[in-house]
Length: 446
Image (cartoon, rainbow, N blue to C red; front, side, top):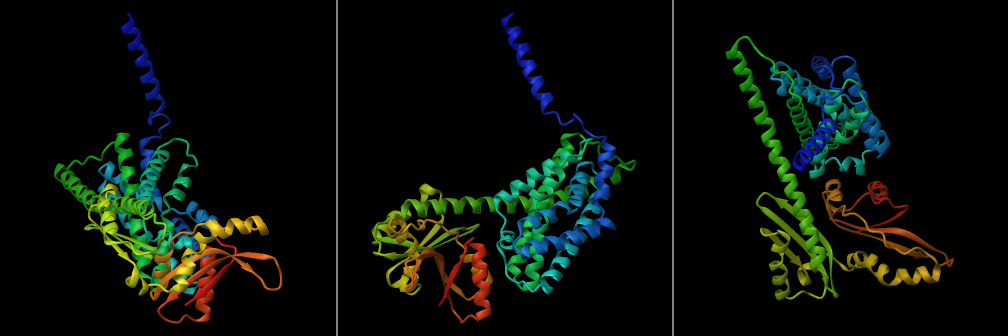
């Protein structure tokens, strides 16, 4: 008796959960869903002009570093249509729909890149803002966003009543900004930007397509049948080849992105936890990763670490899953070839203020404690200025001779291997102010 009661309760709970998560509830007619996705896969007439206008809006938003404008452009973008068409075609064995989706996606991509290239070629603003630079290097989070965004998009597309999910998916998956960044890379000659942005766009597109395919199969959409069984087998073979050619590289690339992200996290943790020395400080760090292993390059100032300490540090790298990682430590005479006293002063300025001067100034002169930290933007500066050597940035307090009042400014010291014009220096200072989110930047160029 007790067993039957428990069984009925368990069955009731299971039924309630199944009903709550049932995707067949409120599911639209299958034929209507297929026709709607097929229609959105086309890029003719209004769809094409909407795409062009959206690309212009997104390019302007990226150019002036306006997140709101970029979001507005993504809301009106029709790029999701052909990607979902490819996923649906694969899911229902419709080779014609797959070909149509690929053809229209290729056309949309080329038109988008051409439009954004034209805009960035004629615009008077040629600086790479942070919104642009954020679209040049895909991360593991981009993969997750594209996948789950694609799942949300196709689920919403199969409902009787349409909601605001599709516009939200268009914003989350961010297909347009990478295309605009690719156009910027072509217009400005920064091919690294172009390749990185296309890479991000490809990853996003493939994982949206995969998520569409999975939901279509989960909802058991009817597969297309052919009277000619030989032709049906041929279509199935072609679709399998398309899946293999598309998914295999994307999975490999996604795996590489995940490994790179894990490596960077482990490397940063290793540096922050193990390089805590009273009289020695890390002033510059570079973390690089490839399929063969990784490399950590550190520049130290202060007392030189003995070889025994360095060997001990290397032996601890395994604890951070950095087994095949090369650790390069430059200090002493080797470090002096890379830095000078002005760089040393700038690099430790923030630490000095945090530990000593900031507390005294805050108490005596009622100015804020200088505790703001800044992101590492060395790779971004290197991409903009190939002759860049190093930089240092910190908050500092200016004491004026004619008054007892003080001012807080962000001091940036940048070293280049060749002279920089006044106009370029002005552009760099403006970019640093925006990138570091600082009220004012005092730029020192060496």
